[in-house]
Image 1 (spheres, rainbow, N blue to C red):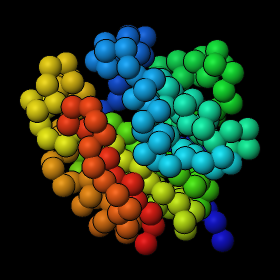
Image 2: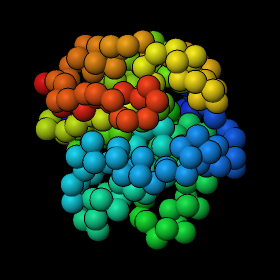
Image 3: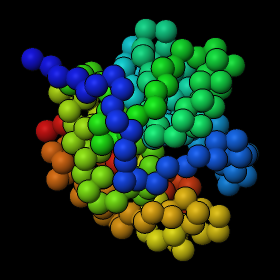
Image 4: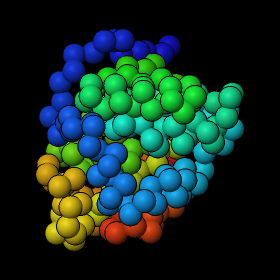
Length: 214
């Protein structure tokens, strides 16, 4: 028997919510020095997305990665994106419509994802865990495990180290806290996942972990 969260859960989170959607993409472009497209393609490659897969992007922001994911899973695949910021979701919907990408964006919090059990093949959590305190990170991990298929994958990317190590303007992304080295692996392992691989993304101190359910 599967269970589903309410379609309209009470939107309460202890995490940091970014509301400045309008300048967000410009800021990312500046930080990435115009190489955001190559960066997103790199993430999709590391997540091993394939045609026909069902993918959820948790903390999707303005939707760029979700749109890239849709291009990789093809017409038979399904991609959804959730974010606690209504401004981010509104911008993501406009971007996906402009790109002609069928991506379903919803306002939701990581502590109560509005999807049934075992619903997705892949969950993406990129550069969002540092916006959550320890308790919310565990709640997020539990929700990800709940909504993934038994053979599903969790792809996690975040800054490992302090905001000072991130350098310059990237420190602003870590206002809530930071991910200590080894925390990503520790989180997925203690949440009941098996690490498939991990390493550097190739940009600043961004690390990734690709894991499957035990």
